Length: 518
Ligand code: C2E
Ligand code: MG
Ligand code: MG
Image 1 (cartoon, rainbow, N blue to C red):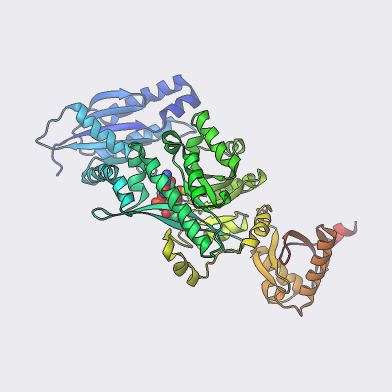
Image 2 (cartoon, rainbow, N blue to C red):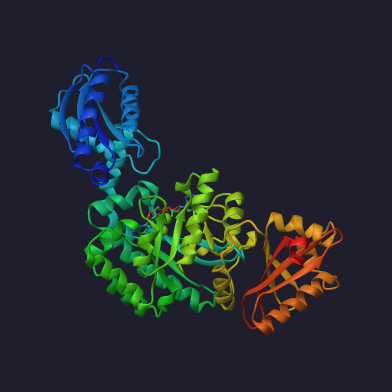
């Protein structure tokens, strides 16, 4: 109940040290000075109790505390110039009849601030009952972790990873779940950071690794064409245990080929000590694949990718504020640059068909997200995915599609990618400009896929002949095709093939006859 209560407010400049590193110590001091005067302007009656490397703590009776924090935030944002400076605030409303020491008030406000995580746009948080409950839960999970593992309350869920070109499952990400008899279902958000803080994360991850290997062995024995499972490692796993040795032992115990396992690490690990970098190299040297997780969420640049033997980059669609032209441009540039480095791309957090179509059209090789499926218990994978037509990719097709995935298809040329399986072409990707152009080339209302599925059509036969010639000559083919009203240049390229399948790329453009003659 608000009356004339006191509020303890902890205001913190986000990544103050980064600001000082980038702009120099003097600029940092100026920023602090300006922030102090903003605080004094908007909280004229407040008691400024302390100030420390990018943070301020004040006690105020101003009931418009949230609004005032907003004003300080707006002012600070402008102070940063081209790199806007962000602040976050923790608030503790002191109960009317209480008079705890300032250090205690500060601790509450500071705790509230520290629980504003990646939630974009969140400016302040109260130390309230929700947070109190959360802190109690954190305490609870720390105490009960080992018992929960032993009691089977911690489970491995699997989320499928789908190849954009084939629409088939190429692997899974293993994600931890906790079903507690008292607290109910806990998501990793509610317990991972708690057990990281208490330095117990290696207990959880060791369990996960063993369980994944056990599940893989059962799947292999049951003849399921499982390909690979990726799992998350925390930077603390490297500090707290010999995680490499642990993975090796699990792999030996369950007779799993190392190629089945991918390790997901976030960019935060890379700023760690040389010792951690060496441990990551042990994984890659031994034949495990290492993926960079959550790209786009932090400050990682593509340059860091080159220094390590990353096999795949996971682009976080949640942090891309997908939809704007700018975000699409950034994702496209990331996919193209990553591909050039020989690293593959996977977009995670894909929720809509629009996102999927876009990612496929720019050549992002794999996707993962609620659009296809939530993470599932192992026993529910088949029953959930099969009715939706989401099935595992055949093992022998993997190399073929992997090779096709290397092709840069990011520009908006009229383009079709087709899978030839002996007697028919299956469209893997036909972009809109290609459909439009083909209608003109062929002078028909039929879609390109219909035409390519009709062995009696002249176009089908022409493409087959040209493709066979390409296969023999091992080159691209380029020829002019005369449509009913004008001529077109068609370019064919076999982008990948195996014993019985060929992936063919066709690009088409209107031919400028005058230019061709001269
Ligand atoms: P992550 O590795 O980036 O995992 C992807 C997260 O995105 C998962 O959250 C997944 O459930 C969620 N997700 C999947 N599809 C979508 C979608 O379409 N939209 C949205 N909004 N989210 C989607 P989850 O399972 O809650 O895990 C959160 C994070 O906790 C993981 O992020 C990972 O960093 C960590 N984590 C999970 N399991 C483990 C584990 O066994 N060990 C360690 N060390 N960390 C883990
Ligand atoms: Mg992950
Ligand atoms: Mg991620």
